[in-house]
Length: 293
Image (cartoon, rainbow, N blue to C red):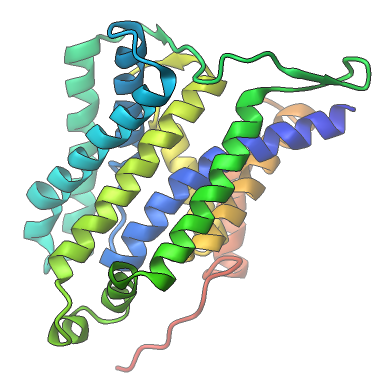
């Protein structure tokens, strides 16, 4: 039963990574940039949900919706103020700006909420499910996380393939100049991408803190980096790839902690990234793009 329990925990953790990775992969796929402040948007979403339930006594569902709304606005503001002026700049300039935005959000969180850890209450206050006479315990948070991940991936896939805005975003990801000539508003498409990615970050933050109920201003930093690893692992720019990469990475991390070493689990996770980049740089479901020179 230990193996099955570890597998379930790995899928649950990997589903959180997958939701975060979906935000990374959408922003990269459309805007061709890596938003390393994404992990800190996760932290903001978790804090908003915490304040809504703790201080305002709002229902958990309402707190999640409020966190999504705040993070959506935050994502659009970050894109408009920090990234939009650098649309034609080098990748290095955008990367440095993203790191600056990340530190800015962390320090603002320190000023507002302090550095003391907060105890996060689960958004699903239901008892765990005991199977096989109590030998196998499945938490309701794990079930909700996996179901949320699957639903989000399906909805995002339908959105990008069936809706006018989604098709426009795909056109922008292929060629911004050509899309603009066809009447597609590139700025709006990129802003919508950041809005969706930030809303997903809020959901991931709440689910993450429900499973691991300690909230500090650096809560999203390490999960954000691991989710980026998952996005690269699955094929950055691919929505199914983000899900596959996230779940596989979660399983690898949990099994590493259980069977190898808790101290080495993070090293093993990042070693996977190195191996993937060496063997298949495009990731599991990524596609090789040929560029004319």
